[in-house]
Length: 590
Image (cartoon, rainbow, N blue to C red; front, side):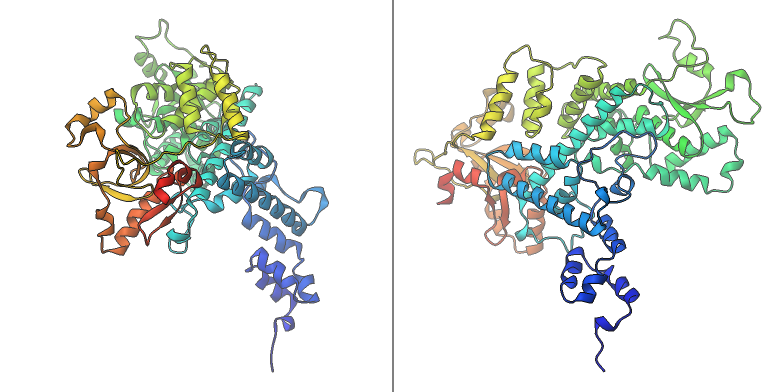
């Protein structure tokens, strides 16, 4: 006797349907009347919706005092809007996804309205667009992707990956700005617990893919503490010490080394969540959140050079004197500290000893202080790939919340932001007018060129100064052994005389008159290399195919690779340039 799917009980079929994709479910619905009825189960489509989507459409990130940022669609969306079914709402969302993909295709394929289309995605769909864009993230960024089953190197669209990351960054930074304005508008935010760390999350949004950080890990840690039967038997001071010990176990560590302390990444709370040592302000915000998870009230107190946590002790049954109504926690040092010890530390900076009660530092001041910390790091350390993100975050915080002037010239700030964040023109337009009076003209020019892109001036090869290598070729540096790909060239060195002197160009066998190449390096840097130092034979002579693929894989992980190249041609050992790059160097592709 032949059995079929139709002979199975409805409840068993519904169970089977949960393993199908939404697309397969829709296809099955078209096979017969019974399947059409069974696949309309609203619970099934609710599951499909939450399996596919993390963020709701048209809803921007909102500041919260209760849940952790960035939240999720499950918390925001309890039922479909306007009384429609989950299936209908899924279909509506899928149509919006198709519009986002259409706009992304336009951004990838043409220069015209690239900026406008990116802003349209961000302003129209906000967080909802992240669910679509994340599908195109490269494996090196989206660690949730299984490397063994991800798209093969030859099939990857590097340009699509690049612009997906750029637009998601724009959405993340716009979300950070939105949070900063909410913080500015709310005058009654309690400086404690989740509210405090959610406020610092506004800065995290300016970090690369910073919005994807989940603060919910703190809730899980708090639940682990509360589930310990002995925890509730502890005194308040013992609970405070237990939280300190737990933070150490969870790798929330102090940056006691000078190099770590002035690392600009410390201004972003995600750095601490990845196990990197961090500064007092970040540690205190984490401590206050964990204290709230454990039923305690902890608030930050700012002192010159340090921030500590002040834990309310008044509701406990401990035998306390007036001086111990509040406990002071030096989270950075990992211990409870007395008021007398605090005064001993401040004897050289305060004329009068500090007395109780201590004023709690407002949230606005703490966020501004975090921005000033990053500025201090920028001034002290000039080389970090995260400097532009820290500069952007600092400018945004001080522009929205106030808290001090930037120690950088306005035109230099504009130059960095325009170069590093080409889609963020709307933010630049909100900054105070420049004393140079040229910033507004520059921004207007960028807007006009987005609507009407100027023709690309081609760079032609000349027999007078022959250029040996071509755009897209993979090579190994003859002296430093790094691998790189060529993304531009000059028939002779066009760098400044200062740069040439610093790099010892005159010591090269062929000097400055030889061709120089703009290259993207496997360490994510961009360099200017003399022709005599380029060895393309090194790659083609490799016999180990896996070694070749690893070299290409590392080059594909360079952040700007998709800005210059569409894909990689492993067989011919080269990267395929974008149409813009082909127009700029037409003789390289004859």
